[in-house]
Amino acid sequence: MINFSVLIGSEPHSAVLENESIHIHTMIQWPKHSHSLPKILYPLLLLLKPVIQFIMLLWFLCIKVPPPDAFIVQNPPSVPTLVAVKWASSLRQSAFIVDWHNFGYTLLGLSVGRSSLFVSIYHWLEKRYGQMANGSLCVTRAMQHELAQNWGINATVLYDQPPEFFRPTLLEEKHKLFCRLNRYLCHPLGVQDCVSTGIGGYDQTETLVTTQVGTSIFLKPNRPALVVSSTSWTPDEDFGILLEAAVMYDRRVAALLDENDSTDEGVLWKEISGGKQYLYPRLLFIITGKGPEKEKYEEKIKRLNLKRVAFRTMWLSAEDYPLLLGSADLGVCLHTSSSGLDLPMKVCHSGAPVKAFLWKEQFAAIKPFSHFTETCIV
Image (cartoon, rainbow, N blue to C red; front, side, top):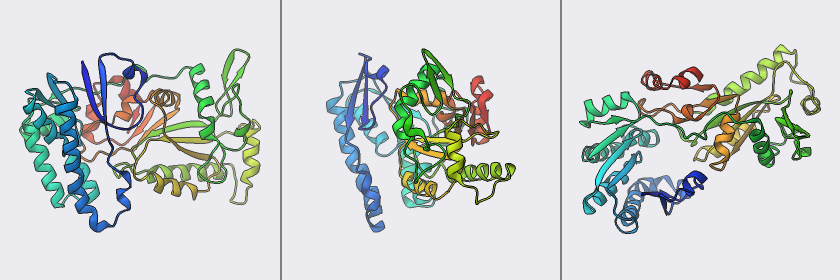
C-alpha cells in the first residue's frame, strides 16, 4: 500500500487515481499572493511559512496516514519537509529515506542570494537531517559523488524514468487533442497573431495541425511547427532566451523573403489561414506550467509584434500533457539547474528532439539513456 501526502494542486493521471494500492492525502497549499506584501515582511514570511507547514505535515504523517514501513521524501523542498518526516519516522518507528533530486539551499539562493543567512541555515538543516536518513537515493552519479564527498551521505543512483504514456502521439490522438485545445489556441497573447487568424472556423473535422476527411486524418501541409516547453516559471529558467530566439527567427525569415516592416501582417496571416504554404514555417510555442514569473513573460510576449511566431501559455490535464509533448516537433528545456547536479526530467519526458542547457555533469548523467542522447541537443 502506498500513501502520498501532497499539496492540493492539479488532478493526478487516471493511472494513479484508479490504482487501488495508491491513496492520496491532500494538504492545504500556502497562499500564493504573499509576494504582493511589503518586502519588509519577507523575512517574517520565510520564518512563518515553514513553521505552519511543519505542524500541518507532522499532523498528516503522524495522525492521518496509516503507519508505514518507510517514509520516502523527495528533496527539495528541504525545510520543513526533512525535519517533519524525520520526526514522524521516529515517532512511528518507520524507516526514513530521502530521494535527492536537487539541493534546496541552492534553490533558495536564487531568490535571496547565496550569501544570505537564511541560505546558510537552510543548508545546515538540509545536510544535518539528510545525514539522519536510513537510506538515500539520487538522480545522477554527479550528485552521488557530491553527497558522498561533501555531505557524508552514501546514496544509490536511481535514474528517473518517464511513464509509458510519454511517447510519440498517434495521428488520431493528435487530432482529438487539438480539437480540445482549440479554445486555448484561438486566444492570442495580444490582439491577433499568425495562429489565431482563421482559427475560429475550426470544427471537429479540422484543427490547427490536422484535418479529417471521412475516416482518415491528415496533417496539414501549412501547419505551424510546434515547439513545446514545460516550466515552473522560476528564476532558474530564463525564458528571455526563448523570446530572443523567436524574434531572431521572425526577423531572419522576413529578411530572407525580402519583407520589410511595412509589410501588411494581416494579409500574410489571411494567406496562411487560406492554405498558402511558405518556405519557412510559422512557429507555435506552447509553454505549459504554473509559477511566479508567468505574468511577467506574458507581458513581454504581448509586446513582441511577431509575424510568423505565436505563443500560448496553458495548463493541461495529466492526460493531455504527455499527448502534447508527443505531438511536438521540438522540445525546449531552459532549466539551468541551481546546483548543476540534477537531471532535467523535461528532457526525459519529451518524445521529440530536445534543445536543453546541460552542465557537463548533467550531460554525463543522461548517457545511460541512449534514446535521450540521440534526441538531446546541447
